[in-house]
Length: 142
Image (cartoon, rainbow, N blue to C red):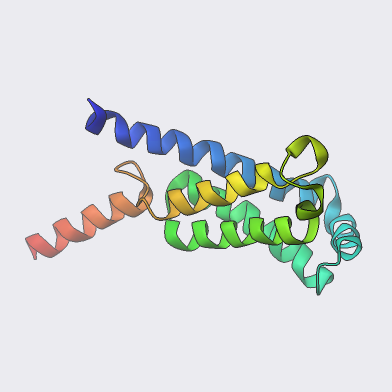
């Protein structure tokens, strides 16, 4: 029973975390705008804010999509976790642990989830797994 549920559970986790990143990245483009995101990054003391703002926005959109699809998971998971470490260091650490006080609890959970998803292989319903099975089948039949 557990083995049958595992691919679906991993898919649901990838979708949930991926959508969170996708929406936050999209907000940096559409709601705040890159100029507004850059100003926020500057105020937070993030180095090279004019480069970091669009880079983070793209990372969160593309990385979120990668999690949802289950593609390039170790890369996407690692980069998204590093993104959240940056958010902790530059924005949330001063608020302590509790989210209600601007703390880092939520972004720490996103970082951990990104790493966990990135290094589980994403399950049988991940694009990485599907392509890996196809490559393996092609190699066997050749």
